[in-house]
Length: 418
Image (cartoon, rainbow, N blue to C red):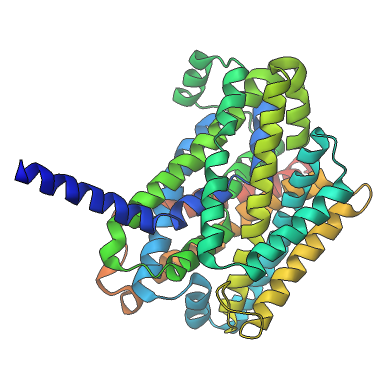
């Protein structure tokens, strides 16, 4: 009896510790399913049916391995990834890497506001009302809030993304076909399909995520004694990421693809679902897009401002006030304003911006991963906590595959002309 009581106390103590440390892995994984990601998954499902669902399995494995590296590096060094890159690669290399990342992340944030505009149009709210209101609310949350308040709100947003499970089930998917496509992967090899695969990988394992994950571990003040709980947080976050992506692809494949309906953005998917799966499915899909867009419109510019300031030695963090970190808040505000302004331009090419941004993510990812793997294998930096052979195998294999896919994608148009 006494032993049982001790076991129960020990169990609840461990649960309490896990809940206290909960956040970085789940938030990083969930924000990955942003408006750009939802658009890519929706277009992939509508265009290729169930044929590209298999890409989520290797993406899940790689995502988990990479996020674990980030967390371990942040815990051991107490430094962000951007800081470590600058210290070890030099300012010139850092400048060009982060210039590309900054441009990509402005495009990423623009797609978040496109998601806000598109989802609210489903509920008959004009973008000239929805985008400014959301932009102001997001700015207030970050500039006037604290990390703890923001984290709690982000965790609530994370749970709400599971609405895509409902949309998928209302579409009455063919589970046997899904199983066959996963066990027997195939897809037509051409520029469009390669771009889509790179886009799926680029949005599932986005470059900015690596910086945000490592920085949030540091903000939370985690230590190696908390490692096993942090690892569990990462696993839950990665599972949630891939589950949501899976059901978005299933929802669009089982309805839009089967009826030959092509879409260009996530809003189109929500509208097209209405006659096929009912108004409720359409509204649930649109609501999920709205929540994901707000969520990511908060995190993405925040992460970008954080790692850019960190890379060049400026103070950064939402627990600092404006006077302590002016560069951080000016950059954050600028990214929000520029991204929202692009969306408010009449007839702005939102679809090309969204898809191009995800492809750019996929092209930049190998550069970030090379920096990460070199750093996490440096004994001067990591000591006894350097990578194990399996981590390196997954990491370098991912880089090789991405480089091959990117090279084929970039040179395929030239080859066709010869």
